Length: 338
Ligand code: AHM
Ligand code: MG
Image 1: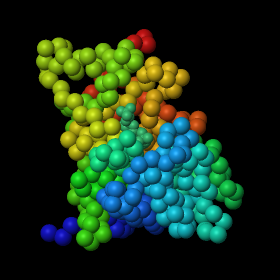
Image 2: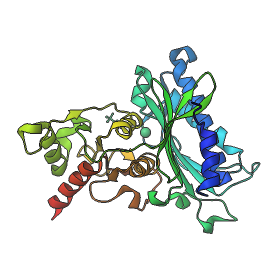
Image 3: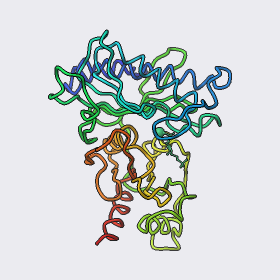
Image 4: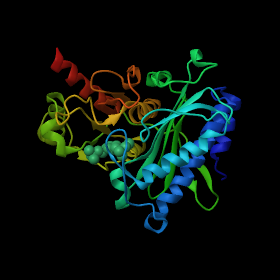
């Protein structure tokens, strides 16, 4: 059987559903090519001199790893010249990056977390790249886009996806027509479709949360996790298993493969921040993927994709995955407020 490549999938989508314009197709091809370059660097590790930290900090006050900065540069360079973008934004850059005037400009905005799971880089555990594509507002035509133009709710995303650099490198993508997965064939240099329609079961026995933060959680989260820990001996009819990779990409990839619930809730360590994860280039693209696969994503209170962003690097509390569990956690939050 000949398997479909990413290019074939994109051409088919462009022809059949009109869901994809030539510009967006080019955008996805370019982002996926950049992910191949990052995958190659990741796989070299110490041999490629890419491990370890730099002296610098990013806008979030986190020490930058060499691979964070390198991956950011790969994505910027790859996406500057194609004529498909108006600007880019990244976890690693304080403000937006306009397409230089020497290149034609397009109507799309690209946001990314170039290397997610930074704490896993030096220990040879799966990491990834997360990306989100928005359309620049019509009002931006004829002028440079601004940070304000990026502040659109996740429900307006045109494309969302990630690459996970694990035992295999995979690209998982949605253009709003379900979720598809491709595996990188390193010999051929091609993305080959290996999952036609990724679906998240509505129920699960697996949860994912950093338990070391338990004493800092809000009451509804504690109540929910206490129930899972009690398993059959408590109010739930089953025992639960736990997994925490500490790379959102890898944890979400697991739940897109076999279900589960993933949470990074608000906690009282930094009470003024709504959470740890970033809305625009982590939570939004992952929420679109999860919803497109039949799952749900909320911040405990409301659907993540409905949140109106107020800042590029805004943080958010995240509860996503198997629908029935996400709904339960969200209900506990509502009940606590009532
Ligand atoms: P990063 O983008 O700087 O790598 O941070 C995000 C990561 C997520 O991938 C992961 O879910 C979380 O941070 C892990 O946090 P913790 O180390 O608190 O468990
Ligand atoms: Mg990240």
